[in-house]
Length: 263
Image 1 (cartoon, rainbow, N blue to C red):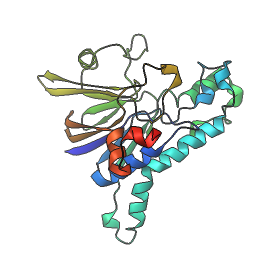
Image 2: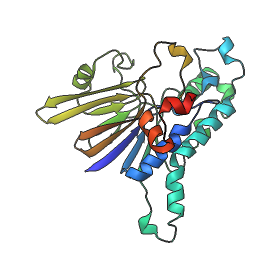
Image 3: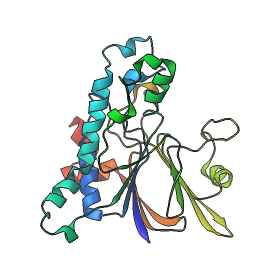
């Protein structure tokens, strides 16, 4: 049996706070899970947003700034592990080396879409610019099975290509047919479905950031944000533990998240 630690969408872009990635890195080092899975949309890449093209919101956005912000933030996440291992460089058996799995999300896929729309920029923009040393990177919408749980940025209707979005967890569990974990949607949904072959777990976790998203408006930003730890993962089943960013802030900063951000 193994322990999975899941990092939902972090949506990093220039100007947003990334303190929580340091907290998560410290928590990973303390708990030492066997597997860390980032569900995607780490690089927000607003400069390549097709929704904002031609709008005032695009003013001042720069691709290289977007890339660097994400690269720096991902380094924050793994920095505690690297510091720990450097301190034990003469005792290799004590090093901590979890499996680090990074899924590409639809925001990273903005690079591919931009190239598809304008082949002249190929090379000037590239997925190769997204630095992820030590991570096992998987393409957008690729499904990765780990201990019987299917991981992908999201799952979609094969007939339409559209993501399963408005459905309840129970419906998605029945449709997908096995234990799954996905990001993409803000907030947190979790459910169980008993089957003859054992219990199936469905998990949707799409928010792990400190900033508010303007496009969600004033009423849709108050959703759960944090990480999920899956204990005793085996054959598609596990014991989940939900760890909020508020808890991590209290643990590593000694104050509530609201006080840390606005106090």
